[in-house]
Structures are given as structure tokens and as C-alpha cells.
Image 1 (tube, rainbow, N blue to C red):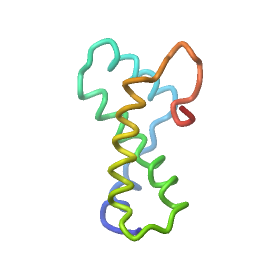
Image 2 (tube, rainbow, N blue to C red):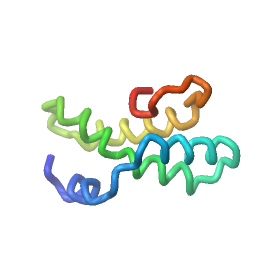
Image 3 (cartoon, one colour):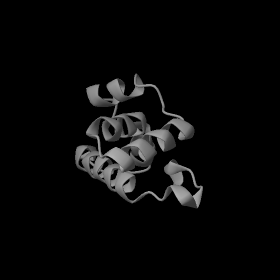
Image 4 (cartoon, one colour):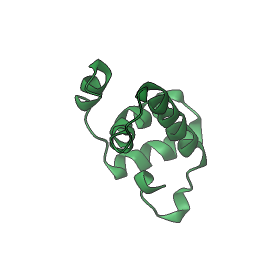
Length: 88
């Protein structure tokens, strides 16, 4: 799946867990979509990593589901649990 989208994602810097947690806290308190977008962009490689395990013809559908999953995780993430966002 070395298409243009994947190449663009690989150029985006990976967001550290501390940064992710900071933006989740900001998003959950303000509901500003800018923070949500930063979290999603900074964690797109998580989706690529999971997709690399599958041999599906149309990985675009799976990628979209992954973005939806990240979005849901941002909404539901419990900061008091003291866990990494990537394992949530």
C-alpha cells in the first residue's frame, strides 16, 4: 500500500504519547476540532501499522475505519486510567 496517501503520512512527525495526552486533555475540555485534528494526524501511523497486517484488496476502507476508530478513542479516552493512547 505504498500509495500517495501512505507516503504523505510517513512525512508527518509521530506524536509522542505525552503530546497526545496533552491534546486529548485540551480537546476534552474545549471540544476544539483543531486539537482533535492534531491528535488524528499525529497518530495516523498507528493505522498504517495495523493495516500492514492485512492483505485486503481495498485498504482505503480499512484506513477510513481506522480514522473513525481514532476519533472515537479521542472521545472516550479516560485520562485518569494512566494508559498510553496507542494501546487504548
